[in-house]
Length: 150
Image (spheres, rainbow, N blue to C red):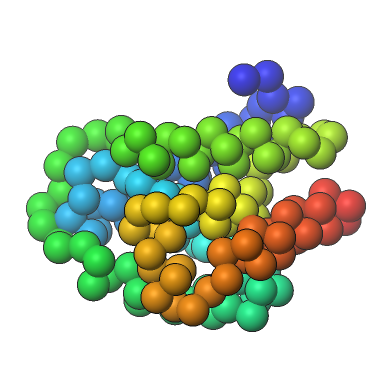
């Protein structure tokens, strides 16, 4: 993966992956999945994930609360190693970030990638919250474009 601003991108990737890993561990999951990436994106300093939720009329704080019942808390295990769905969501977020030049990975890219998932815990949680995943993905893409334009 060629990065135009490697230090900034590496910091962002580290923040995102460490946050996803921490979220998974808190929930007792062995490996982070899309829902953990989304929780990490919502906590990112760039604020784009939270603004994407708000743009779509969804409460970003409600996602974390809705995640808790989906997982049985247990002791943390292992080192960072995302689930296959988590890896796909991360790779899609990176792909989306490269569509705008200069590329810059944002929390909104993670929101768009995860909102595009049709199956799994994150998709189920968003449905249970009454969030229109397509509208959320559109809002996330619009938020990422706004952030790049700023």
